[in-house]
Picture 1: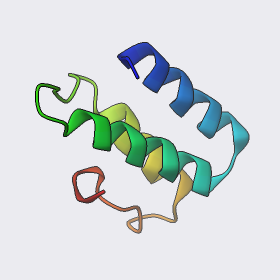
Picture 2: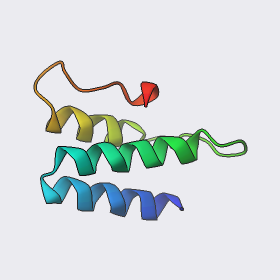
Picture 3: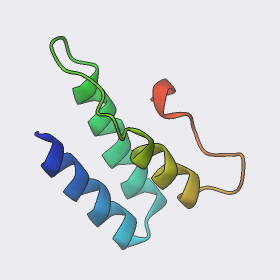
Picture 4: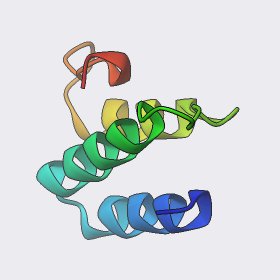
Length: 66
């Protein structure tokens, strides 16, 4: 999946209002970024903020631990 598809998947998950959907979109993106030859995008924090916004304060998982 390319970067714009990952961004679109995250946007759809956020708009759904589902914590599980946001977590799944973030897990999928991180799994792809961690593949050999791939890299984390400069705005990786967009995914971390999406996680933080769907969990109670200070309870969101760290994106790097997914």
